[in-house]
Length: 188
Image 1 (spheres, rainbow, N blue to C red):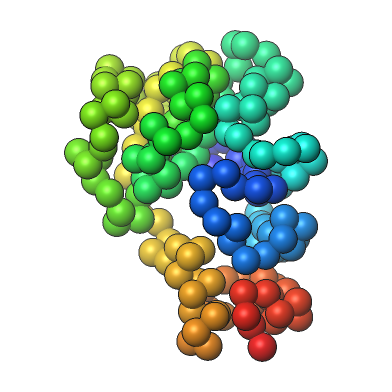
Image 2: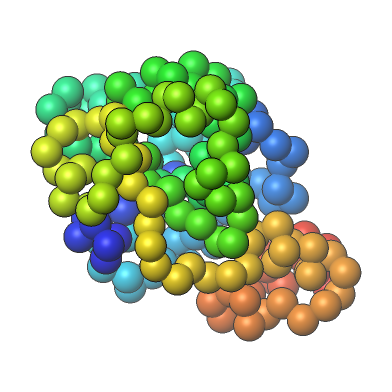
């Protein structure tokens, strides 16, 4: 949000096709997300993937989003570096470049040079050096965020909860209370 000076719509997936379900239902994940961003300007929860029937594919979400904003508005998809490196495994992954820019956030995972050859070829000539470059076209560029990110992944938080290790300090207090109240991820 701050790096791009933009509103960020956070879209919890109803049924992530690329990995096992994360241990909480879609309604619970959306509720926790809403609690986490409450009071934060220019952050909102977009429930379109929760309302779609069937599998939740990014290409379908971006097509629906693009239909709503038009062909000329810049749209960016924020993904983690680990997800971006796996992009060639996504449904219709090459079509995504015609629908949105990619903003890639790292957490000490795969380095930019650790991309599969198909991805490296697809992004050749697409790298943006600054956020403003994403405003000049509707889609197709890749921006690597160069800012510190929260070091703990959602997978780590879930694993700590399941193992009975300390985890509450890793999430906002209202989210921790929700997890405990609903017994999510094995919380007592």
